[in-house]
Image 1: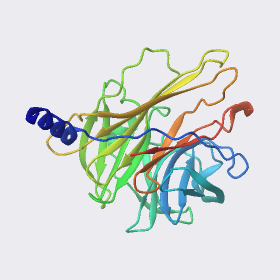
Image 2: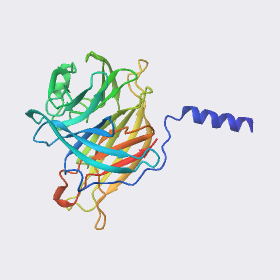
Image 3: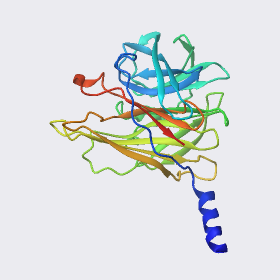
Amino acid sequence: MHNHRLILLIAVLITPLLVFPQKKMQHFKKQLPPGNYSGICPIGNDLFAVVDDKAEEDGFYVFRLVVDANSGKITEAENMGYRSAHLPNRDMEGICFRESTNTLFISGEQDNEVYEYNMDGTRTGRKLDMPDYMSKAHANAGLEALCYDSASHLFFTMTEQPLPGEDDIRLLAFSDELSLVNEYRYVPDATDGKQQCYGVSALCALNDGRLLVLERQIHIPRLKIGAKARTRIYAVRPDSTQTTLEKHLVTEFTTRMTLTGRKFANFEGMCQPCTGWLLLMADSQNRYKGVLRDWLKTIQL
C-alpha cells in the first residue's frame, strides 16, 4: 500500500498539466463579422484584441467576449470595431498584450517582423529585434505564434514550420527591451505529406514557466466532404538547461466536415480569457462559401 501511494504521488508531481473535458464549440454569426482570424489576446474588462490575416489594413479588431468562469461558456459577444494602423496588411498572425506599456505586439507572416502598436491601432515605431536568419522563412510558413509572459517579462514567438533546410522550429525569446535573449528548438509532429496545412499556429504563456503550443494538421479532400483538422496542444518549459524542448501532450481533438455536420475548424488563435480556461479561435476563411464558421472553443485547465 505504501508503494502504491508513493507511485501515485510521483505521478501527480510529474504530470505537466491536467485538462478536463472540453466544452462545445460556439459561434456568433450575428454578433461578430466573418473573418480570417489568426490571433487573439485578452486586454482587460472582457475585451480581446483579434487579428485577421486578410484584413484590408494592418491593425486589429476589438471584441467583447464574456466567458463564464464556472462553465467556460461564452455568454456574450460583441464587435467593438477595427483599429487600423493605416498601413498595408502584412498577413498578421499572432498578437499579445503587454500591460506595463499598454501596448500590443503583432507578428506578420509576410515580413516576419513583430511590431508594437498603440491601443488605437497605430504603430509605436518599435519592434522586436528579429535576427537576420528569420528573413529566410517562407511567407506562408513564417512568423505565426506570439505571446508575452508577464511573469518572466519575455516575448515568445516561432514560425509555423521549420526554416528552409532545418527540421525543428526555432522558439525565440525576447526581453522587455525587445532584444533576443534565448533560442530553443521545438520538434513539430511528423506529417504524412498529405496535409494542406500544418505546423504551429499559436502560443499561450501560463505565467508559471510553461508555454502552451498549438499544432494542427489539416487534410481537405478535393470535394471538401471528409475534410478534417487535428488539433493538439502541448506544454513546454523553456529554460537555460535545454536547447531542444521536451513537449507534453495536454489535449487533442479532431473536427470534421461531413454531409450532415459543419464543425470543421482550423484553430489559429489561443489565449487565457480568465483563470482556469483556454480560449481557441478558428479561421473560417471569411465563412467560406457559407459553410465554415468562426468557431470559438473553451478548454478547462
